[in-house]
Length: 604
Ligand SMILES: Nc1nc2c(ncn2[C@@H]2O[C@H](COP(=O)(O)OP(=O)(O)OP(=O)(O)O)[C@@H](O)[C@H]2O)c(=O)[nH]1
Image: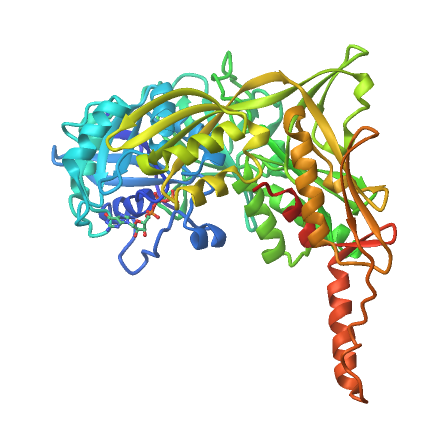
């Protein structure tokens, strides 16, 4: 068994995260640091060891925070333990960034020297500053001809507001000056504090399900010592467990005898499911508990909800099992059973954001082979009812009668957008179309930085896609939830052949209700195949119809064109039609194709 480097003084431990805008080279740099510290031989060095989920590798994004312990013999002659916490780069996972930061004393800020400061660079730095981190700026990709080190250095000072004179210039790709980063970690970041003899206080940073070992939890020891065989207690949850194993990531999981203050490692303690442990909780010893828990961080709350329904009703149980399996490794994702008059039995699912939603949906179809209909994503509204109660509305279809509603509050965000001057006009128009309120407009080098407050409802569906297409992919975007505000919101119902289609119901601000209702009816007219009879497609607020389209009747015989006796061709056509029908949903007498659900709600 690997023995802990017991006796490593705190002064020779450094705990750090790497923060960066997406694609600035965080994972590549992490790999280089691991390689430089000899944790893996070149042959073992699989590309991007930290991004180990298949989907993560394919999409090139980091979803789950990971940690690695490195051993570095520094120029001062001493050997240091460097604990690296990986952090995800995308806005949806900002919460995971904050908990990784809480476990460290410092951060490396990676900025692509050919791109400069981006929206997430700022958002991440502010989080690191909030966590009292010492920050080491690193200018990456200096091998690129387009790298402009001096310009980006000045940007970091002006826009980010931290000194960048001694920013480390590296190329994570070629391996240039990786030692400069390691030396900066040792000389510029503070060592952790803590007392090995105090009662145990360990921050629960992450947890996941390992098919062989069961639930693994990742902790950062703040005070005290944790040993194999100890009985631990979760201070907030109150539950207790026997520790079967403690260990560190080298980056392979390696058992050690004990973990002391300042260290990061894992605990395996026969915990049944990830839902039993709360990230942010404090782990202490049952026989000698700490007086109080550590200041945890806010729990992650799903902000975007949508319904997931199996296309084939027989897949309902399979969907339930698959969702439960995904939840084992992702406690931030929520689901509860739901019934829809239109779509049958399914689940209402909560996500941290749209990317999170997309990832879960893709994993369901790819790993579990499920064909699903997803309803339009919705934010969580706070409903204040006339009877004095308050409830959270996750599904527009459940909205109470307008007469029972005193007021409705909706979530707002603070968004930061960086964009080239030439696209600024269209970005400002997009923001104001989405009820945005401009808070600030400044310049970062030759790019504009617009700060807006926007209702989240206007952003969840296609804001990011629209922003990207308006700016040909150049805009960078980041947001934080920024409170709830009362708003004049109404539920718009869509009726097909007089039948309300609950899965198409949505909530919108009264001022845009009619335009959106009309747009959706218009789109549905093109998306719903003609039937043998005329169909009315309507949008309504309560009993008031605000838009109407009529779909003319048509008799459609797919085999009409095959006269003659070619039976096999006829059969093929009919088979094809049957396949198509499987992808439709019957509403009264009308069949609506699956593609209509999302397409109808896309705004142009
Ligand atoms: N030329 C050059 N390319 C680099 C360098 N570092 C990283 N890259 C490339 O930049 C791209 C993004 O790098 P990643 O390490 O995946 O970026 P990341 O910041 O980890 O991205 P996320 O994990 O999605 O947050 C990859 O194609 C890398 O090969 C560098 O120093 N020079």
